[in-house]
Image 1: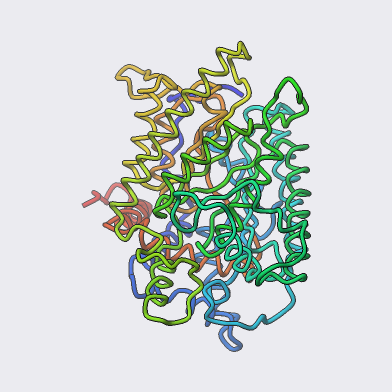
Image 2 (image 1 turned 60 degrees about the horizontal axis):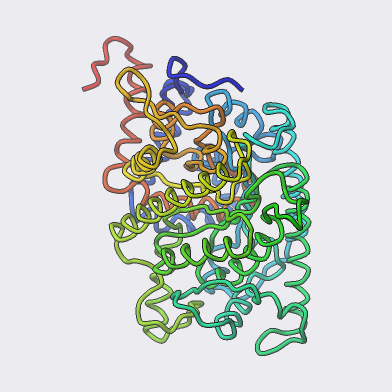
Amino acid sequence: MPIIQAEAPAPDPTKEMTFSELVRAYAVFTMCSFPTLVDNSPRLLQLATLPGLRWFGERFVRWTFFDQFVGGDTAEKTLPLLYKLRAVNKGALFAYSVEVDESEATGSTLSKKEPSPHKRIVEEIIHCVDVAANFEDGVSGKFHSGRRTWVAIKMSALIPDANVLVKFSSHLLNTRPKRSVVYPGCPHSSDLDILDKPPTGTLTAKDIAELRDFRSDLVRICELAQERGVKIIVDAEYSWYQPAIDALTLSLSRQFNKLPSRENQNTSAVQPLIYGTYQAYLRRTPELLAQSLADAKAGNYALGVKLVRGAYHSFEVAAHKAQFEGKPSHLLSSEPSPPVWLTKSETDDRYNACVRMLVRKIREDVDVQQRKGKDKRTGTPGLGVLFGTHNWESCDVILRELVKSRLAIKSGRNEELVMVPDDVTERVAIGQLYGMCDDLTNHLVNSTVSNTPLIIKYVPYGALSEVMPYLSRRAIENKSVLGEGAATVERRRAADEIKKRLFGSWYTGK
């Protein structure tokens, strides 16, 4: 694949949009800028499915939020978007975005309306891995380096009853060795030992059987991903699911991210294959990240890190408040402080601090490979990081730290470009959600030079009825991402382009 040069920059996203797409973007970002409307979006989206309103409601949601934030109804229908992204040196984090409904996850409803479709979802994710691999085989060849179509999974959608994850998390918090990491704690290599023992505590024989089957499905997904050269990114979820998710992610990482050794050369060609998600808004994250890095080094496996700010802040704060007031709550912590930082500035500071620590560790990993005399172009990464952020300052910090650590160099007439070599792009990516902050995405693409896409978009897909929980959460997350005037900027960009299309040279932009 040729290097994407500055002479062929990614275009202004509004210039590439059709008139109807501009109107849709204007409408969506206008709605997202009203806090009351956003806070009530789960109920409003649910109303859209009621008899009598369904026909109109579904068409409205499809034309607005679905088309703005979802790549397509099926994996195959999303392929044109993947080709469009790759044409301007953008990769994709592909995701079948079926989630546990907010009411189920937060405990506001206790009854299950219908049998779990989890096996069908497992099969669809396996299909998603194949579609992603076939796409990469077509655009990158069957090489294991430079593959930039990955697959994200949400564990709570892959088990018959997501409350089993809550019960398992509670068991882990009560039985795992105590560490200095605050709630929701730090995974331990012995976490899954319970799956080979008789039921104990609140975990029933049925719970253990479901967890065993669940892990078997995860292994099947990862075995195919290993065979096809597709990275698997495990999404983070509510804190009451997280201890169980962490335990399973650690087990998968130890199995599939194993690095070559004298005793074992039969390892995955794509490393790291499995990535866990670290949420900067959780108070535990800096210490958790430090312990994860140490465990990976001691265990001789590659650590995959997806660093995000976090998408469930309002739910975590509400759960802590309910527990403090003696009301029903899924929160598994008895600590006096909520699990999340309360202010955005605190989360921003922790995110940027984690960026600096991870870039230093990437520098160390590259140095280790060079000392071992491995292929200087790629080597076998011992650390891979996906920085998920819509924050301009954090993106600047990432690029500055890469240059400062000699992982990238400045180029161009005015040093306006950051050139990132292959051994670094095998370890680093920066991502944003599809449909959001395209101006930031394009700025990053136009500011960097790389053979492999450094920038990726999180591209969900699924039928409208299946992705409703994702859309409602996305709307709520947009309130923080698009706050402090960002929604106004997005809306104004769409409005300016609409006016230019309508009035041409008569429009002055004022």
